[in-house]
Image (cartoon, rainbow, N blue to C red; front, top):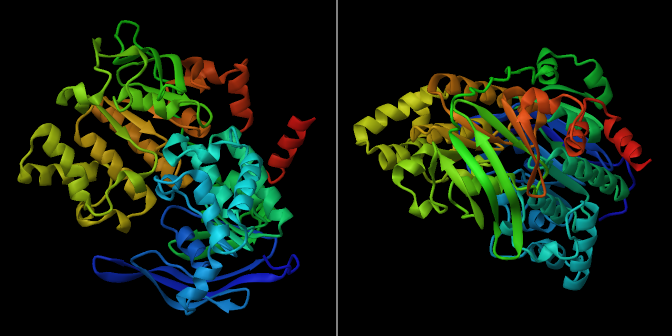
Length: 541
């Protein structure tokens, strides 16, 4: 890292224009963006899905995704013009002086290598550190990011840690070379609110300590308020508004900015349970884990009624997604049983009938990982129609169109590949694929965590409408308490693999709370730039 002082201009974009290819035609997706970033400054990029936030962020590395290209304009990093620079020049910068934290950690790690080896790769290859020094630095940064067992967690493989822990490991990797510029692309998306606080505090500390400039891409305005010095609001690849954070939050000039600040108003009333109706699914005394040494769930019992939404909340590593894997048969439990309509389900999906598999479907957290990048939408949605319902080609074609209409996407989307869709559109496709099997229970694993607030609200309303129309039940795994308040009938609070509180939404969210529930509720960021500092000071006192 160079020794230039804070406030020096580091990154400049002028009239940046980027095109993307869809349907064999080029379309402009970034439209004349001007941007200036100084050392020690954090710039927040906000806007709905498809606004061009990530495209602009990675353009700061002189990079465009496959299917995209620079059409005009310049990107200058510390005096080096990147759009026309040789690849060798850009390779020397990436990882050492410019780092990137991706939104989807699960898709960004090599599953065959341990975390600490992947941390050390950039500093060793760029000659910043030797392997021993890199390993020592890894432990230090893991500790700063509040990762569990920082001395040893680096020796795990990516699949042996939770999604939130993996996201923190990616933040640690970006910080390995102490770069001049870090592009944070939704770095706290997969984190629960308690962990998010620690990660935000660590990012803030490291950015200031090392005089690092940062582009912080997010759909969570309360989060960006804690970090950003300035905010740029984007829509359809254009700049809508730019300004100092406090001023913009207090007095947004544009109507669209005001809409972003005012979202998440959707609330559904708690649906009262039927006392006479037996549960659709019942989890009884489940204990489960990964191998004999890693126990994740400990005597967990949960009931889900017909046409009801049960939200499961808790910090990263509390066992939420592991519970989903047990219910779907992907992870046989050590003990306990799962009943569906009063009948015991075989522990492993391999021993379940096709109809038992059909009845319980899952929508995954990261649509980028859940969708096959080489399959068109019609094939993604059509496969369960063929597998579970035995439809022929003509029937599949008709049903795919009906499902696309159901999730409010045009019929022509059937021809698209996942890479031609926005994050919100991909998640809608995942919802359609789950609905194609005509299940009675859908497990939604953080389905809105990767979406901006406007799109997330649309998805929640869509799921609610589908529940009303199709009488389906949801098990909603989330760390977003705004989502819990919006959609749930009942709440299950988990901590370290155990259920510490459960009941109707109103009962759980009304004081007095369980001590851990109170911690979760107090950790939800507020639209106040001083909120994080005030909270950390309060907890330290």
